Image (cartoon, rainbow, N blue to C red; front, top):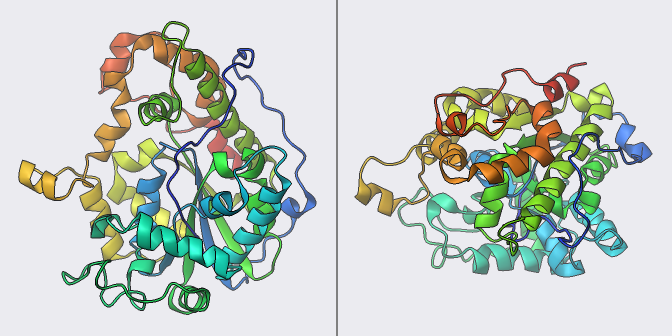
Length: 393
């Protein structure tokens, strides 16, 4: 199963007062625990898909494809539950590391650990997100029978009036295990202990009852970083030197490359369970990539998921339709919006700190070319890229 839980508010933590780093040319590999190299049990009973990404990289859009598949029990950012109950992630917060391991191990087996954890889940899905429209439910599974009287596609559905079902631990576990074939979770790197996928791999290797696949979602950092600033993940107090943008760029790309290096060193049995997906490839042709994406996860093609993706990736033709369905956007235009909005000077800063990881992922540098930046007919992606080859060697 794969799982997802909550919405990110501050995806990267760093100290802007730290001495300005140089560009990333090589990120050292942290020693990986022995369990990372354990054999993956293909006969495991529980199927899980883990979506790992940075905030502002299209992870909610990607996760919602699986959220709308009828075979999926979907939770949104489960690490947020641990963060609320045990404090935020930090290098020396051993309680967070231990409790998050226990929590994720439970989630991947449809075990929700304790009533305290279940209360947090209930608060999010019944209080925090209760005003979300039907097409933007954080978990379709938790907004459907037996928790609600009707499916979200039913016109009678209303989370306030039609969802009296108890989100208690016993019911959650029974529904997760017996009604759905797979659990899907979205995880932001910034909430992982040490910002590393190591814990997730260790969790998956800790039990023969678990079978996990990992979807490593990436996006052009020239899109991620300005978008992160726009939604308040960080602020540039220095409008000339842009010190915060420099530090955010450095840390964001360093985390990506650090995890790519972990993937590169995994045994082949794990690497074949990992897919590196560039968000730009997905939104350029969603319907074409959907079959491959579902096949990787181990899910059949489904009309509900396909229809949702088609609607979510295309903007309505009329203003009235757009007002009625603001969740429908031109996903390709959104991914490329930075090319029209971000100043060349800011782009050059990002390219300076992210050049190596951009090369690994096949993102072409602009090298100060404003003309190339604004010419949307020029594709800034290489079809083949180095990191992709690591999965097949």
